[in-house]
Length: 330
Image (cartoon, rainbow, N blue to C red; front, top):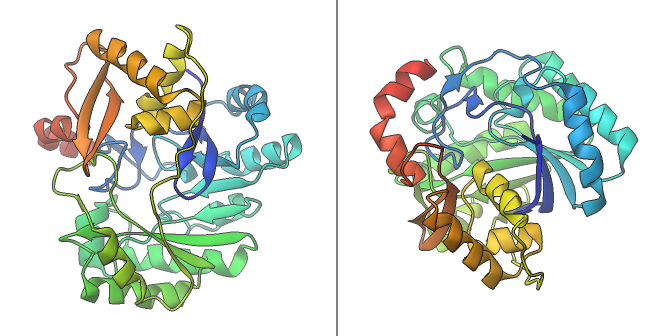
């Protein structure tokens, strides 16, 4: 399996060529809103989860796609990859395409992690809560992660990092899309001092069915509580392309939706395919039981069905296995 995927459409970064460094789903958090699903290996261990040489070999031929960003993210927390600093340095020798790191920010209190990310072009950590109680409820962190230490790490990285530093704030209806909660987050943002804040909400199927998107008007109203520049992330502007699919494109589509649930427009934009051809291909894959579909936020998403499984949407699978997965994660 390739460690490089896309380019995929990103609501923040345009066309993003992703690099997946961590096994699914290995993370320091188990966020209720995660589009990748529930965390099955909750850890703070940093190691070379995949060979660096293999990642670079996968990346080289994909650079011709000229994405807007090369993004280190994927199926888990990328800063758990112990050679991420070496990877960033190696990519810089291969291309001038900007390098972004999308991280939950949970390990930035470690000096060696901050050092590893120093040469990235853009780092986007998360801050989803304004106090320890909400942090536990939304992020469900590894038990050794203290909320204040995580916030201190976000602030320390701002003092050392010279690239662009954006802070993502995920707001959820019934949890954090509440004025009192956002005021707490805004106070911490003042202390951290990012270049800008990006307010987001759940637009794809979530790890837990009780993680609900906030309405756009609500997000815009809450954005006024921040004193620094704020973006309310809107849906990606899907460009229409007119390439006819061939049978060989099945692999590309399956690889894309294996990483995260996608709409027809996501797939068409990411892979340069015609929308109608994508619909026909997905229909065939559904008939074969390879692809399932579900609704979230009024949109239809397609997801890869694991071998031997029935095509149940991600949130349904999470509900059935909630207790077992949680025990294993801890």
